[in-house]
Image (cartoon, rainbow, N blue to C red; front, side):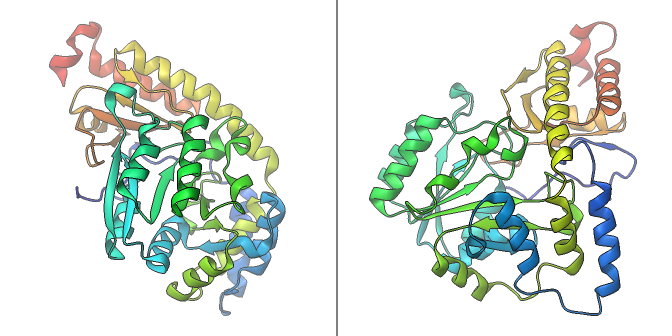
Amino acid sequence: MKEQVHGGDVYRYPDAIDYSSNMNPMGTPEAVIRAARESMSRIANYPDVRCDRLRAALSAAEQVPQDWLICGNGAAELIFSLAFALRPGKALVAAPTFAEYEQALRAAGSEVCFYSLKRENGFEADEGLAEAIRREKPQMVILCSPNNPTGLLIPDQVMEQVRDVCRREDVFLVMDECFLDFVEDGEKLSQKPYLEEQKLFILRAFTKRYAMAGLRLGYGICADPGVLEKMHEVMQPWSVSIPAQAAGVAALAQEEYVRESLEVVKQERAFLRGVLEEHGFYVYDSRANYLFFRAPRGLREALLEHGIMIRSCANYRNLGEEYYRIAVRKREDNEKFKAALEALAGKDGGRWQRQL
């Protein structure tokens, strides 16, 4: 497996505009910051190990029973906890996708097989996904929609095929929906209606939606109490801090912020796509708050010299050094991104390849 590299390394590049981490471009809501700050007066106490107040708020927001919810120290903790709780002998993962799925499964002793998302198909999942599940016979399948790093949704007909084969083959299906928050009418695309029909775990997080990655707060939805109990058995107690729980409750009340964020993401994603395409880069049809594109090698390093940090996707399985991902940010930053690309290209856009 390639080296684990992530976006958001602001500690090594403190002066760069961070396009490598897919946070909400609106920034953290003030009410969330205030709730976390005020909760500090209670840090002499242990956090609520059951996260009751937070889960009650999530239950209302997600319209699912509170007993179906589990909270963790970011989505990453829940990925690892689920892998260690169920320890599937064999699991199938799409590729390219978020590296933590494979990392968690291998740490739990699972054999990992892959369904390759093909370049010639635009890295979109097709009927081959269900065929791969039938052929490989895994005990668990982990999928991400919109996928990271491509931003592509799994088509409805493909998702139906996957649910069908997982039901018939008794396969536990894990759906990472963390970026569905940035998709227009995304809630209609959630797999929540199928929670009681099959073995299904849905992964979500506060990290991206409310730009609160530093607090570490994720949650999962599952209708099987036995699965959640097994996860609690392998998780450390008190993993969700008092500030994180308080911030989560406050965040769920920020409905206007979420609506405004969707509009900003839609507008600025279109602006950035136009900027990239003007330079001849191939841009994939992301539906999330980031864009996945193909461009000359060395672009990340060249942009760093202009104070712009983007995400190289070279360490993703099945991708090379010509693939990149950028977050959607506000127009002020996006104009600087545009200016940096123009500075690299020079007045003659044909000089681009030679400059890099």
